[in-house]
Structures are given as C-alpha cells and as structure tokens.
Image (cartoon, rainbow, N blue to C red; front, top):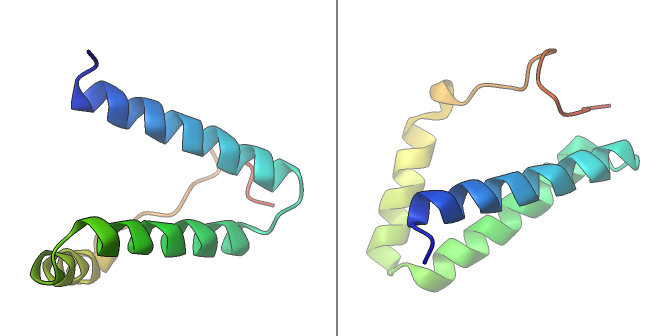
Amino acid sequence: MEDNDTKLNDAYDLIFKQVEKLTKDGVEPVIIAGTLLAQALRLYRTVLSEPDFERMMDTVFGRLNEIEPYGPTDKTLLH
C-alpha cells in the first residue's frame, strides 16, 4: 500500500505532465490555472466541513506572498 507522500507525489507529477501537455498544445496558462483552481475548490468544498473550508481559504489567502511563479528554468512551457 502506498503511503500518502507517494500518492501525493504521483498525483502531482501526473497533473503537472497534463498541464505541460496542455500548454504545449496551445491552451493558455490562465485557462488551465482557472480550471484547476475551480476543480480544487469544488473538491475542497465537497470533502471539508464549512468551518474547515473557510479556514483553508483563509490560510491560502493569508499566504499569497509565498506563492512563487514559474521561472525560466522550470521545465514547463508557459507560452
């Protein structure tokens, strides 16, 4: 049985590869990001209680300055 770290890494890699493919296929990064964000929020809203969802959102918005953009050495194509 896989541990949660392995599952997390596998899911991250799978989604990253799909994002990379979509960008290479010409889908605008802002469209991909918006779709991923909408899906993520719906998942969180489904599995978390309302207080937990609100705490999670407060945590995310409270750390906006910690979110770093992709740089030129990242392996994804952003245009």
